[in-house]
Image (cartoon, rainbow, N blue to C red; front, side, top):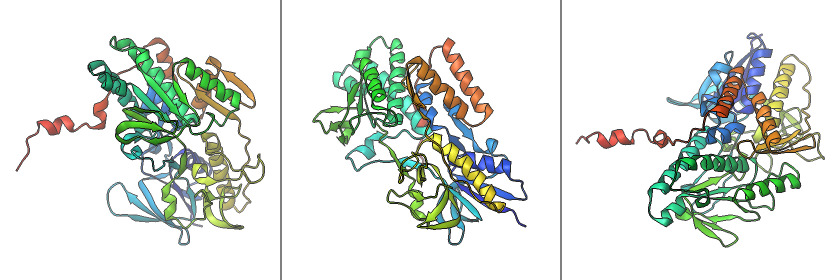
Length: 439
């Protein structure tokens, strides 16, 4: 009997954990696992705020695929089409012509992208916060704005440089805002020309609360902590325009800002538009609790999905509810899906995924946090410590766990690095300026 060809589309939380478990649980004669992703690494997104703030090295928040998935075949490229009717995926490698990969079982887990809106100026002036590249860029940009503000004699230029706008009050937005403000506050110790009062940090949230994953009192506590630090929190307010960096809000206020960060939710990867797999009204892949793709009442044989791009029924909630797009669910779904694929290959029945959301933890900067786990509510340093403990336990590989803990340990004894490396984003600029043109 030929080994089952298992294709994993995407190497995020679902793809990496599922591929790793499959490669460990199945022998080479039973299955061949191929993983396709444009990036050579998996990004542990909960650590993006800490990487941006300089609490850990950006390299330690990513997991190299080839090191972790030694028993899998890694293809660096983007899946551009899935024809499940033929059980074939089209892949565009980094360089070269497209290639077709045939499979017997497919895990479709390309994840999500920022859910943006057609707001004037957002495309030209905004930046998301979902990738390690965006996190590094934001860190360098914020520190660069401090240099601009310290060097200028123009009050308007200084005010604009020191105004930082974040749109979206979910976990990504709150943690990014809190960590970056904490870092900038630290950095100001080396800028005698500037004071903390010169900075303006604005959070714009369209609903009437932040952190919807926790109870309202915990969300209110978070808002109060940010207000105590002098941050400008705008609830029930929408971003209407940011043309030329001029932020205009639905409450009538407007101000100029060089930094506009968009963290207002996610949506399934647009790659799914080029598949023949069934999807729901939110463009997610329709799934059974067993994580098998389903078309109406019929199981789509050989197709599986989970994570941000999948509509997985939540068996612990009321009928009609789905699992939230969180790393907590994605990691557990990946394990259940891998075990179900192994069961199907061996002629057994798959088991439904069922996990009651344990709660949420969030960092609000160094030694500051909020947590609600199994109904227990924690605040301050204890919540911050729980946030770190939980996430270091979840990041894949012992190598990364050790490196992250070392970063944190050194931070207790050494001062935070607050230098901007803006040249990383355009490294050839100086070379091209000094090289003569030919012809």
